Image (cartoon, rainbow, N blue to C red; front, side):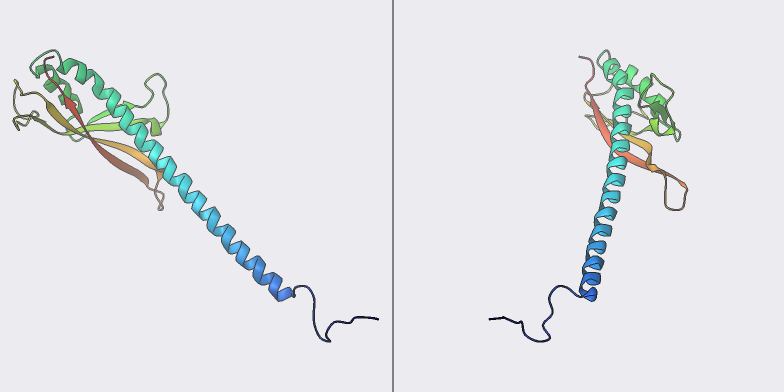
Length: 165
């Protein structure tokens, strides 16, 4: 006995169904690709920010050591290096020439002792500890924005110096 299917019943998928499936998979693949590119861009910018803050920390480390030796006079003299509109250029790798992406501008924005005295505008002695606000400028996202202009970003941090230990 022969068993036949229903007349007009088709088996398999039509061309239209296959095209719709390919379209949906393509949209998903494009979305994954775009999110991957965005993640790489964000990670690159976070790396630059981390390198900039690390360079600032290394640059101010000598001030930290100097601050421990007196009433703040040495700290005040050292802070002068990082004040003003230009700040001081520091490198994330001082042993090599590096590229522009390895250079950062460190600028002291404020320095206040425990008594609230503005260290940048008043002579020593200061009341320990002294809190120093620092702005670090760095190139973000491969150095160019969407219009192709150099993109400079800033990170803010603070350091606390204990005087005369």
